[in-house]
Length: 382
Ligand SMILES: Cc1ncc(COP(=O)(O)O)c(C=O)c1O
Image 1 (cartoon, rainbow, N blue to C red):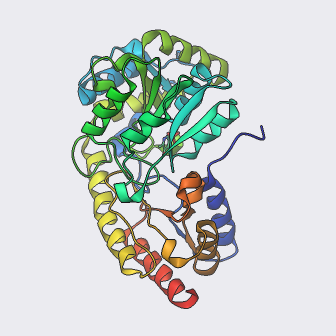
Image 2 (image 1 turned 60 degrees about the vertical axis):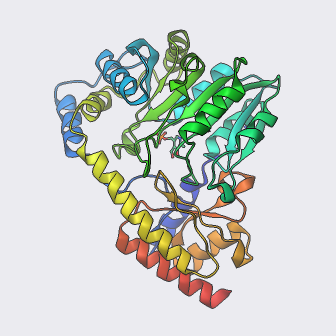
């Protein structure tokens, strides 16, 4: 257990809430969840399902109708042929990370993962006694991974490569040509890919492109996607994995052993989310883009902060190197002194030193207030 990591966002949230209870005014830019309501048609479908008695177990891999709806959506968005038996519905995106590692990774195996990156990857790799091999994401490359560097990290022990685009925490993306180059570098080696596409609908330029769409790669890829970010459904707990049918059957067995199934009325709401009107997610995307533009411009006005323009997701990842402060100390000071809750870049791995992550899942008004407070803090303390 001592090898298992955590997600600092939840810890900072707890601390910030405790400060609020003591009467402090906090601007929450720490947690990675959309602040919008779940679309009304989806909420209605969930309530309707509860009333109709969808309150019992479902099949471990998910309701057939939801698996069908997801298979159709993924086939369409990734231009591949996905059948319902290649879809496993789980309570959130995270279980797909958990199950992928449990199913595929053994002690001594090597797993290549983005750093800075979603902390659960590194946590799970270490937990299983595998070797965590970082592929650094660098600011000067707009946080795009360097394919040549990736090639140099692949060894005979590499079992799994984790890709994430748009990326948490940097907002960087893996372009279509990068994806094709990555596929070429992997070639026909016996390596599986976990492609974390949970922010695929929150892209501000171009089209998302999955490595599963590259010829010969669908069978070696596990796509992770879900409802948390796209439909603002973090608390409903629903996500899914798309993978070969034989592997999907193993994931279903892991579900039987852990959760039995994803909440059945939640799945009914999921059918409406996937098949119903898609204007709300699109509105959310546009709203995040508007906030991104305001917040990044504001950060760049602060002398000691500099911020690249994120291309997707709802995070900004400014460099704070010019402050001369270590990221963690700065994040603590901003929370303690001026009530701005953000995360140290190091919450996402060692390569996050020198950066902070601010979520833009808050109103323009609050984002503006946060900028004012950070600006005042820097003028007073630096
Ligand atoms: C990159 C990435 N993958 C997976 C997840 C997990 O999402 P969920 O809340 O659906 O488990 C998150 C959530 O923050 C994320 O940022």
